[in-house]
Length: 303
Ligand code: CP
Image 1 (cartoon, rainbow, N blue to C red):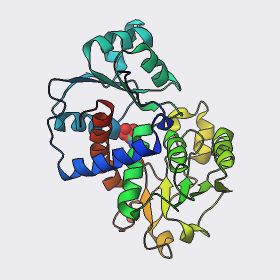
Image 2 (image 1 turned 30 degrees about the vertical axis):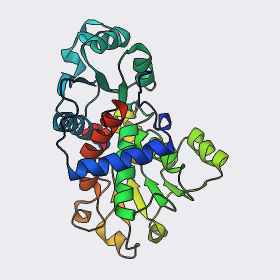
Image 3 (image 1 turned 90 degrees about the horizontal axis):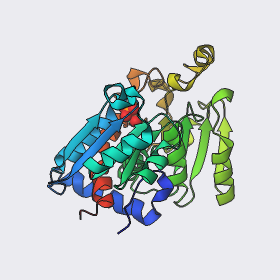
Image 4 (image 1 turned 45 degrees about the vertical axis):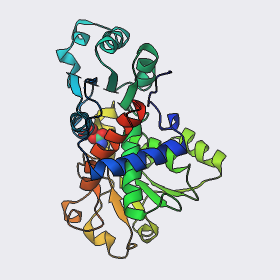
């Protein structure tokens, strides 16, 4: 049987998204299921991570699997000059599945081509972060009871933000989405994603500010301005605090509104929002465990 990878969110169909949502619900009910017993999963993080790595490792542990890998490639033979090709070739001899984060766009697709075992993209540069998207969708479904008719505000770094790129593509599969992009000139949503929406006949609007229109939002998806993606630190300083969501801005918002953020945050959500019932980002991160159990289960055909 051909191995199954998850590199781009478009590698899965809408039916598969819904199957992952269903499985995630089952794992939320019953997280400890020994479905991965006897299997080894390699967790290769060439870039820093807290949530993605630890929630994957929690998911693997709750499924009864074993984890090998590294959290810092400088502790591996990459430091001695070993190529990504050779690293993946070796690891795919040791493990039954590979979870990889890497700073280069396209690296995950390349790893999947080299590997004999399934590869899951845990973020490749500014390109895609499909497992984040599936947990975002699970969070939207849980809080809104639907994935249709969502008015989604994406705020902050829409240029380098791989989470918004994947989420936009996935939510485009559902009925009647509206996207509002709020970003400074330097960090606008790239043309390729706007063209993607145009070709599907999906409405999107671009803004520099959002206080006047915030009452229309079902989901506000805040993002961090990613210092590590800027080659010029002065350019980062210009835009780093351009949007800061504060509690008083939420007064006249919809009752169903939820605020999501892939995290980590820096300044873009004031801590006074944390106690608001519309703040959902910490539960969203918890949903990552159940969703990643579901993704592993689907890819490895465990259920
Ligand atoms: N959301 C996310 O990718 O967080 P980490 O960088 O901590 O994994």
